[in-house]
Length: 162
Image 1 (cartoon, rainbow, N blue to C red):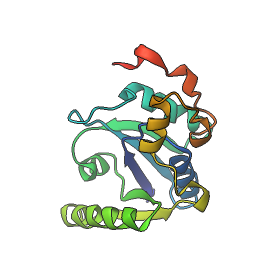
Image 2 (image 1 turned 180 degrees about the vertical axis):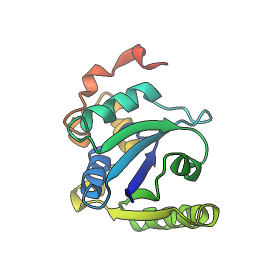
Image 3 (image 1 turned 90 degrees about the vertical axis):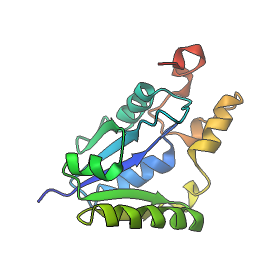
Image 4 (image 1 turned 30 degrees about the vertical axis):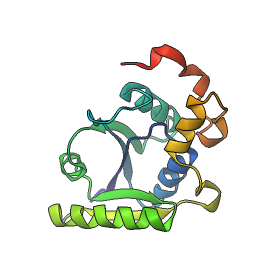
C-alpha cells in the first residue's frame, strides 16, 4: 500500500523550516501532499494562489510531492486523498503540546489516520511564518528564511490580492 502523507498548513509564507520537514519526510513516505488550508475567517498576507505557486516552485524537482489546497477538516481531506498520515513539524516544546492536542482529536475523529511528527533541525527552530511575514511587512530582507526557489521580490505590492 502506498504511504501518502498530508503536510497541512497556512504556509503564509512557506519557510526553510517547512521545506526541511517535507524533504526529510521523503525518506518515510511514497508521496507527500503539501496542503494549503484555505480559511475564509483568517486574513492571509499572500493569496492562496501565490502560496501554492511558491510551494510548487520549491518542489518542482520532486515528483513525489504534490501541492494542493483544502477547506474544512484536515482528516476529511486526508480521507478524500487516500492519505493515512498527517505530517507535522515540531520546533519547540510548545509546538509539541499544541500539535499533540490536535493529533489526539484527529485520532478520535479518524482512527485510521496517524499523525507523524518530525523535529526541525536546530538551525530552523527559530524560523516561523509569523516572524518571516513581519519581516516582509516591515520591508526587511527575509530571503534567508524562505527556500531559495522563492524570490520574495516577485510577490510585492498591491498585486497580492485575489
